Length: 278
Ligand code: ADP
Ligand code: MG
Image (tube, rainbow, N blue to C red):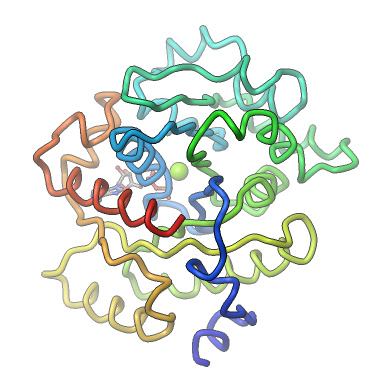
């Protein structure tokens, strides 16, 4: 299949969502930066919470943008005594670091810049890529869905987020180089499946920042759809919209910041698709 050739890995039918019952820990991953990983982690978790699911969002990016997007600003971050860093380093139990957000059913494990230090400090652990997985096992039963926002690197911190999850949501911008980024990600997935996380699956690819008026967008989208089996790509696309981009600086997910916007509607629809696939 073309799909296999492009991605350079053999994905068996069973490894694609829909063939197995998937677990509930989902990492939003793509090795490219700026493809809306964080935006999707924030807004999907909010939409799932709004649907009545008990959600935990784990911010595993030292930039801490998911944390800020939920209204915990730089000044508030200084007050946080425990964060994802402490959990991943085994210095705190997850329950000690998790905070309640003011949004329906969403809890957050916040991140600050300190998390960048984990990249080096994790190396001393024998099971350095399994620290987050082991930690989340302690609290898995308390949530319906756990979403992890990760960083676009391939370091040990990013590997922790790939090892800790059951499946991946891959946000993808429809640009000419998007497929190359995803091919890289698939090569990583293959490596992770061989070592830290044998049962890792792909829940789906979601097109983000789409703009139907742009010819290049439409063409790339068509090309990508051709390369992947139909059921890998979510039917919901996230349109480019200024309200989605504005929402984080107001510390609110889009469904609260502007419930009537196209972006809010799209993330609610995506949440429904995600639940249907789980
Ligand atoms: P990543 O986490 O993959 O690096 P981000 O979620 O931070 O990506 O998004 C990158 C930039 O694109 C941010 O400035 C964000 O506000 C913006 N963005 C993401 N999704 C949309 C969208 N649907 N419409 C407009 N801007 C968006
Ligand atoms: Mg991000």
